[in-house]
Each structure stands twice: as structure tokens, then as C-alpha cells.
Image 1: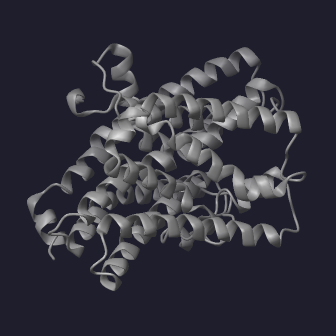
Image 2: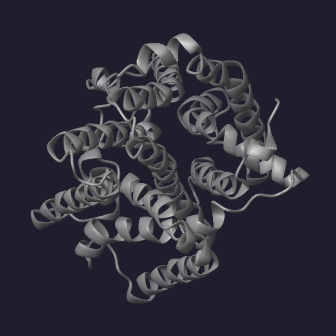
Length: 381
């Protein structure tokens, strides 16, 4: 696979690689159902949750910079946003629908029933207002991203139509803050009427629901805005922000542990404040990581490759690879030492198949978006 390392930002590749490895590590626990306590289990579970949150912030940062660059262009027109969405969809939709169909075939092949809500998956509606069925469960984050990417351009177009003489930078900031505040408000309203509070309930009915989570993307968008409008400050305080972010990250976890804050004992923190707080903390990593470029050492190349195939890993690792492997090679009768071999086989399959998927399907599909006829067709004013 040919990679132009000179065009890569290693810090962002590292952030993406850490995110996907966190998600992957959390699902390895399914191979060890007897492991339900201990620090290692907690760290792996936490890594899975926070890995997706890292993806949200990083994705928002990248698309925020793209949107702002288009929006402040004096020649800006809606075609810029049309082509932005088309480029995004050439990466996400072919992968998503192909893996969705594979999940349907797999569930049918092993004799299980498809959920009654299967049609919703085709419109990214499986978890719009409430938790989704136990089918293709790793897809929960994708509707959040897709709707976030649609909302931004639509609101920006409405804003520039209503306030044509306003500074574009100001409109962009206002729209970003409005989105963040709106979806914090949805969490507040939801928490006000809570009748059930538990970690499982929080995990399914709030963390993984579109209506309460779109702001997760927009903390990254806000960071993208700051990086472009206040570039000197962004560079000057990069190390300070990184140290502050790391310090706050550990401080939050220590306080939660010492105070024994749970969804039951402190629902307002868990259901309203926790995820936005962590997203803001992760945003503090971006000034330093977005400026970190390095020579392509072996380790650096490995991290970059993991970053490139991270979307394929995310879609394939659990519902397709792990569930198929468990069907062919059940874990219930395995010894601990045999499970170690099982993990190695699983990881080889994940990285190998994800690499092949990226190289022979995802990358060719993405290359189509750069074809002149696609750009001319969708970037018209």
C-alpha cells in the first residue's frame, strides 16, 4: 500500500490508532466472559467507551476545518457543501451498507432472527431517539456522525441566507455553539424525567442515541474553528493544552473513583456532564497532536496503517469477525491458555481482513470521489 507519509499528520494518526485499539481491546473481553472485575477489565471497558469519543472529537476537528475553509471563501456557494457531503459519503456509505448486508447474511446463516427494526438501519435511524436492537451494535456511532455532518452544512446555509452581511467566521462560531447547547439541553431534559438509572441504561439509552450525542462531534468542530481563527494561540499553547488535558483526564477519573460516582448516585454528572466534559478534555490534545509530524519509522508506519484501516477495523472486528469466529470456534469450553491463542488468531484476522478491505474496497471507493465528473457534478453552485 503506497502511503505518502509527508502528507500525514502523525499526531492525528496516533489519536485515531489509540481510539480504534481502545474499541478493539474492549471487545476482546467478550472472549473472556468470566472476567467481570479488576483494573485490567475496567481499563479495557473504559478504553472502548472513550475510543469512540476520541473518534467523535477527531472527526469533528477535521470536518470543522474543511467546512470553515469553504464557508469563509468569498466564492462560497452551496456546491461546496454538496461536494463535501459527497466526499464524506463515498467513504462511509459503501463501507456501512456492505457491512450491514454482511451482518444480515451472517445472522441469517447462523439461524438467528433479524430485528423488527432492520429497515431503520438503512436510513441510519436505528438509534435516533432511543437505544438500538442487539444487532450490528457497533454501528451506533455512525448515525451520530452522519446526522452531525448534515446538520452543520444545513444550518450554515440557513445562517448565511438569514444574515448575509454578518462575518462568516462569526456565523460559523454561533452555529457551532448553538448545536452544542441544543444537544446539551436534550440531555438535561432527558435527565429531568429519568425513572431508571444504571450504567447499562446510560450506555444504551443516552450514550448511544443520536438525539443526545450530536454535540460530541461539535466540540471537535469548535477546536477546528479555534485552530484556524486563532492559529498563533493554537500553536503557542499546544504543549500547555496537552499537559492540561492529560491532567484533567486523570483528575476526572480519580475523582469519580474516590467519590464513587455512578449513574445511580450522581445521574446529573453521568447523563449530562460526563461525556461533554471528556470531549472537551480530548479537544485539548488537538493543538499538540495536530502539529506532530514525524519521520516514517517502523512504529510510525505501523500507527499510520492502523489509522488508515481504522474504519474497516471498526466495522468488521465485532459483528463480522468475532461473531463468526465464535460461531466456528465456540469459546465456552476453551481453557485460559487456549483463549490466548484464540485472541492471537482473532487479532490476525482483524488486522489482515481490515487491511484487505481497505486496500481493495474502501480505498477504491474513496478514489471515485476525486474523479473530475464527480466533482463537476456535485460542486455546481
